[in-house]
Length: 257
Image (tube, rainbow, N blue to C red; front, side, top):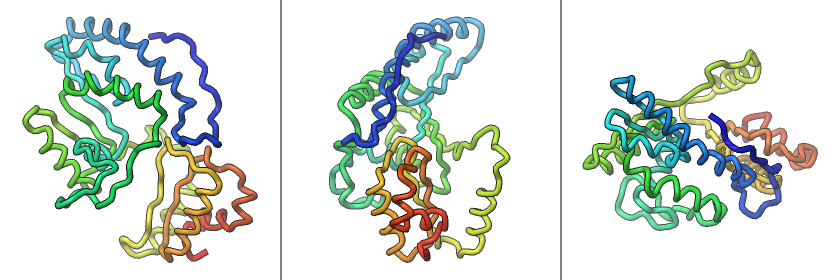
């Protein structure tokens, strides 16, 4: 399968909207896969009793052919949390959640989180394609998000759409760089259960030095032990961070520093 060549500019750390908009050309290019994927589905449906397609949530338009083939089922893969999907399903972003046990009050709005171009792209993938899916697969587990998985099941019970929590998904091959991993596990083993905060903003959130410094100070002032995951792309000016004591906070994995 081929797509036309495209160019993704380097990320702009000074962008007003922190979403990785430099990847938009790659998102747009994926739409060119619709024709070859449709051809493949038709060929497979003639040979197989049942064809199952699991696709990224941003590629709904690519598998439109699945709705026309009686022995083909498509399932959305959700890489975001079940909490986030539940929030959108109930339309609560930016609103006050009242009289429910699932959502906190005063939920922040998503306004300004996406570029206008990506919002349009997102709508094109969901508006006409989501209702034809047979179910959703989530990169989560019921131990962590059981309440929200149950909530989603109830929301789509009439449509017969199922939801599976099959995560967390780990790399197929884990490099032999176990020193850091072992250090984290040894450090965690020294602390009581439910006494460590895990801080991670995912792979699509970019933080500038000022934001990281504020988060570091907040974590330190919380007097709570924590593990904070920072992407390589957010490393920025490590010298400036060290001057503010941020480096020792991250490396130390504890607000005691």
